[in-house]
Image (cartoon, rainbow, N blue to C red; front, side, top):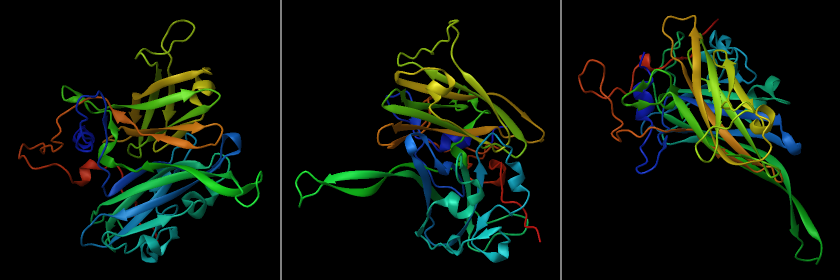
Length: 367
């Protein structure tokens, strides 16, 4: 079960001289956006997400299809039973919602989808209205009724932002101010399927089964949120372990001197976000700087070919302005910068493509 072993490594570039390695490759035909939202937040913030999709092909036009995974520890595997909850670009492909901008995106072209949750899945907007987005891309008009397609590469990013008020001095009236509406937001790159943390890869080549989030602090000035997405196949449940780590590298401790951690069960394709995780989960109210280690504690499946994988993100938010900063996950283990791995048959050919590397596909069309 090494579907993601080579995948995780291929998508990461070694940072020489430091202990963490961050993902730098973002092109793929299957991309997970770890969070998009249309929801209210702390301190009267109101969040929305725009999504940009770019066709990275040099010659071919492409189509795109998307599905939203609502948050809340719910089993979202039913979304892959048919295309009812999906958004695509062509009526003929039988998607529940059609936006023609998702069809025939030209080579090198880009589109921006504004307030994507409210636009396509309004029943999931409002309080708690967030989740993950899965985006598939393929050669224009190549999607078959059985879900097969001709893979083509895209990049996907999201900007999640809230609206605030800016007061600037009125140049014409001393002592008076002009009020204007502004936005404060954060950008999050979509995660290709080959960059997911994979429980299969724990070997002498490295440990790419867990992720680390930096920049964690929480006090009167800042709050820190963490999100985790079960990106496994439709039949695999994950029990995730989330551990806060002090600046000296030691774990935070409970009163009984045992290391702090929390576990959470993520059903198939589930999303969860912890708001103000230090105070709401660990009852810590003044943390100057910390990290989090996120790993799979256990997993279970009802399928015959499980692929236990996940991704995560961190968000540091200024309590005064509601200005957010994204913290992307990293792998800690340094490794060969080649990032090109042979096939299992020893032929030496790069193992970059193939349906066996993807745990998910577009479902069949229903009449």
